[in-house]
Image 1: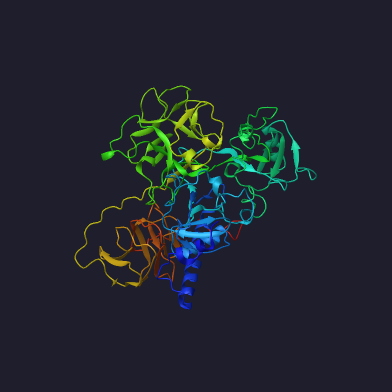
Image 2: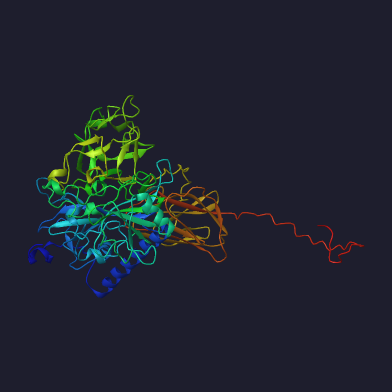
Length: 616
């Protein structure tokens, strides 16, 4: 890992705001507690379950040296969430795990390079094959990496929570979960008849039928014929780190120079079942490798219909996250793109923690469009099954293939073909940094789901809607600390007067509000309010009033009647991303017509039932 000198304070950068006296230490602990509680509440709200909602903050595996890429060192040993908390308390944007438990943090990464490449290569370079500390790590992160010697497994400090877009045009369910490592303790060992934990089967369909019969939501195939059932996606506690995706292990790349090992751990290249399946993909695992399935179709991650506030509009290799699809040659001067730009693999982020415009894409209606100029699409020029490098062409070009599908096996395929899809050309089992940079991205006619054909579509969250321009208020009617019974009790929010009623607005409204802010507004003689404008970072920057809590970009804003005793508006923003903010105004309460309660007590003479009343 390095000399003891490399781990001393000589390379530590500290924030002078954080002193070591008891008061400030207590403040730091309170801050991180509140922040972690906020993140936890956000996760509970969206129910991060690893299936319908996924937490995936991993950005890649990167080199380190004794002069440190991420300067702040927190010692060891650490699990992922322990390290995250320490990075959060000092407000670092990223943290890293190295050599099974060493914790570092910083605001940029990628300054340490070998052969001009900052990434160490495939994600497996930062994994430990589910051993040591990884198998006991209970982090909700989708992938558990603890780094290796001089290699940082880098995560975003703020959890990246991925949810399904409101636009469902690219949405579809799938049954194939992925290819996972197994061991003698078995990832899946549920009894299906009270006696046996596995059964020899002839097809994936037969295994799926057993799972349905015994009411098991997951099942796995191994070496073409062994069927095992599971009650949970990752059974046990935690076991996620113990059974990593097979292509995130160095075992998968073991003896990559010896081609007899080429198919040893690849699920899609293992022994085929006796019968071909009709209801599930015909993928049946391999040596100590489970092809895991959801018994009933469900959403799969990653795909083109997932997004998160941390999404950066990149298309990354699923198991080499530091590398993205790239238009060769960089961003042209003046942004004037030309047809024919070749698609290659390139490191996603520069040393300024930025993703260049020639690596930003949106998947819209099945087309991979350049984010900053959606008139251009990733294209296969020849409209038939051939092996050829992908290029940039005008969207809608005739006699070319452009429309794609994103699939549960993580492949990107052309909609017009059953065979052709994206492939990092000539990569094979090579997984070092020099093997990955500048590799050509091809359309390949025999896409099978091998590791160089798997991609993570990291869509950005929906753009912040532009606020409706508001009329300029009369002089002296904005930027107020109090007015008409409303008062700023805490923070930098202000009061405005509109139409004879007070309104509270976020700091700097309608500009980007300040981060790490808290406001409290008191209201007198206020029975109802209306949020007339609202845009914030979803889940993390929140407005509360009268039992209502808002974040993101809600629609259908309307007048809200306040419950009795509700006289405060509270606003909190975290340390990360700002937006255009909010405006909330005093309103007259809604008048709800009362039902007719006129009493009618007329007895009808001669009626058999003396309890009967007329006027009904």
